[in-house]
Amino acid sequence: MGLKVLTVFGTRPEAIKMCPLVKCLEENTDITSVVCVTSQHREMLDQVLGIFHVVPEYDLGIMQQRQTINEIMIKILERLDPILQIEQPNIMLVHGDTTTGLASALAAFYRKIPVGHVEAGLRSYNRYSPFPEEINRRLISQIAEIHFAPTKENVRNLLQENIQDRLVITGNTVIDSFKYTVSPNYIFKNTFLNKLIKKEKRLIIVTAHRRESIGEALKEICSAIRTIVREHKDVVVIYPVHPNPEVREIVYPALDQQERIYLTEPLDVEEMHNLMSKSYLIMTDSGGLQEEAPYFHVPVIVLRKETERKEAVKANTAVVAGVAEKHIVEVANKLLTNDITYRRMALTENPYGDGYASERIVMELLQWHAKRKNNKLKVEGGV
Ligand code: UD1
Ligand code: UDP
Image (cartoon, rainbow, N blue to C red):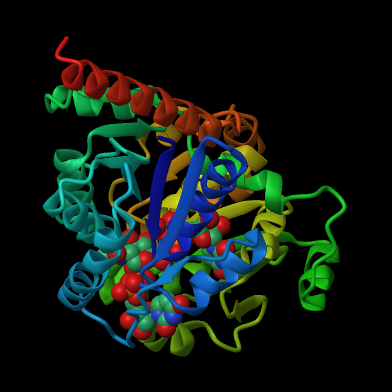
């Protein structure tokens, strides 16, 4: 009786963080690995699958333009259930805090299939920020039987909430992904990026897409970027814009055709990670970028009011600037003009692990399965 693991994910960040784990599962001869993508994202998901050469067994194909959270939830519950019935995995793995993660975990629970939660235990303790991710993640914690927490702080959060079953500190699998994406002599496929890094300018990468930022907050963020570029002539900004039309409707009118600001389509993850390694500063509301940047020794300005990546702030690799133009500009000015402040942030140790999170997860899964098999034999043998 080998171990059958069904891994489900659907958005870009989940794919970047789950593909290294899928690779590790596939390499282990005691494990049968089955992958199902929900395709909550389409183009951005396919970009990642291509880079990691992961070919899913199932694709729920749910994405729609301007989809609502309810639509995502309903479609996944409907379309995943028949696959669970066919595959009957020993365990299903979900990731993080997306609606794909929550809907899949719930579908598995309704079939009494155990759930393992990768990237468990992050908390902002503000139910509407990130929205709906904070509550998605807390609900998955209620369903999961194994919690793979990236850091000690994440385990502490779970213990405080009385979640005491299998908790494992693994590091974040995003660090594992760099083995597949980053190389010191990387040549960008996009020739514009090769030119950009050769300019004698400091490169700032910006990304902002969160639901709770769309509206006034994103407008303020865009104004801040214009001000920073105007005040620092040696700065260039690249902003790969999320395909969400509600994001684009704000970002393009505010920043397109501005001097030293380059808006692009989402970069594939190989281009993105290598570009990050060459950047001076990152300004973002993304969760993943907060975890990746310290590996490259690049300070992060978090374009949000708070973060659940608290170890990055504690380690001083990230600073939370809020969403008001004035504060964002103040924080950026300090980092762009004060070398000591900059170096203190840039030279800090990455708090997200050593790049072996996937191996730890696989080991834990095998131990968990062996224990369950033993217990089953004891029951059947009447011990
Ligand atoms: C989702 C996650 C968020 C994560 C983000 C990563 C939830 C509730 N939110 O938010 O936690 O940070 O993904 O990017 O799960 N679109 C495309 N093509 C794509 C992807 C998106 O056109 O490949 C457009 C579609 O119009 C879609 C919209 O973007 O309706 C929003 O996508 P959705 O997954 O609903 O929300 P995100 O904001 O991406
Ligand atoms: N990313 C990418 N191309 C881009 C922007 C981001 O490959 O143009 C990667 C980034 O390096 C990180 C992940 O996408 O690994 C973050 O995804 P996103 O910001 O969509 O989601 P979040 O992290 O906020 O959940």
